[in-house]
Amino acid sequence: MEMPQPTAGHRKLERFSGNWRGEEKMYPSQWDPKGGTAVGTMDWRLDLEGFASISDYTQEREGKITFSGHSVMTFDPKKDLYTMHWFDCVGSPPEVFTGKFDGDTIVMAHGGPGMHAKMTYIFTGPKEMTSKMEMSQDGKDWKTLFDGRYTKG
Image 1 (cartoon, rainbow, N blue to C red):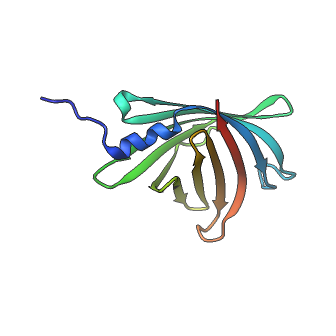
Image 2: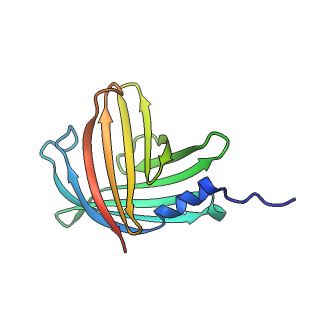
Image 3: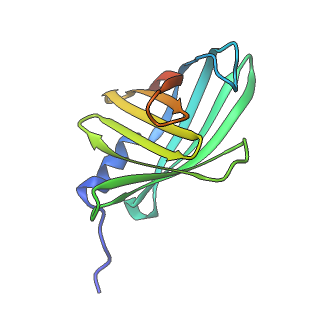
């Protein structure tokens, strides 16, 4: 029996691979009433024979790590859908985001009673990416939690 091979959809995960670093703007929210700036670092790697992209994320403010997380992103070719499982230092249950690529942009969202989140990644160049996290209580009225601009080192 021949082993399955990653599809073109799986290969899009390669775009994330590398060490990314950039400035993030935090908007005032219930978690950060004043907002401010931070430095975000994402270390992405392709794993599991090209079927998954795994990331470790840290956010630093005033020389201290203030937030960290871990994600595993996969692609389902039957549904043409990307899924990202997110775990972080807040200790809440894993969040499951789903979404699709549209050109150089992938928007992934999850929702549940009382909290909806939307994460957008835009590849603006071979070594440049922006991201934005939006939150909503009802899935209709969205507020930006942070946005960032990163370069791959």
